[in-house]
Image (cartoon, rainbow, N blue to C red):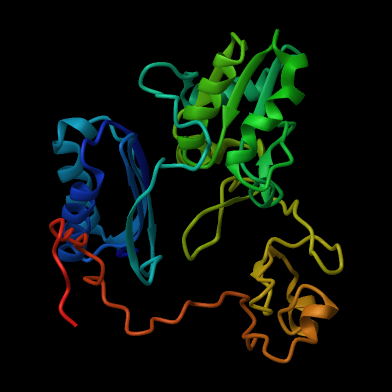
Length: 328
């Protein structure tokens, strides 16, 4: 049995004092041996964390015990090791950077489509139905649902600028999807705001779909990019295939690699052969850099711990009273 759990979750819920909540939440995670990345904002919480099975179960139970987060939908996977080396709990303006801070998905968002229903939509898709991938280029290039429309965006915050390209689809049924559902909450709401009337979203995203429905067929091509040390996970376990291509030679490969040149750090698929020949670099220019990082065959470079202490930065700095002077 795999002893570690990996949790992917979000919840749009009003947090009056995000910084105070962050302190409490950070300490709770330390005390329960949890690592990962958690974003907190006035609009809610978004996290990907990992820890022992019992610790993760306790976290889910305790978070849902708070009425604000009672409807949090956790996607749970299991792993042989912790998927993170550090814990980061941060306050940001939004729980997913979208440039759509005015949108509250609790007020209006696309209609949820559960994985089983989404599977039927894919199976019986007609010309009046559009499957829309709202993820970034590096994500959908690794894998996507068959026949899905993708957008040329480097970051989700670019999504609003691309909606103009979708105007011709206003009379169609638009079904959006992303990794875990959080981006679709705002993407589908923005489409509704822009005059699209028939807008839906895959509830729980690719991850939930893969856990509940993908064991039956061939509707997802490639792998799903995830934001932990696994980098990519299988979704279609029946007839999987590789759709991404090596950045260097163009052969099919789903080995996501960070360029060994730290100044470049490009995150792209590079096949094993090119990885060794290029010494982990994505180009000859990067390969020639004398201070590039040593390549060990993975293309993954763990950030230096540098005396990492999970308690560092736990408490916000207290403001000095007006007129107070510091002693030198």
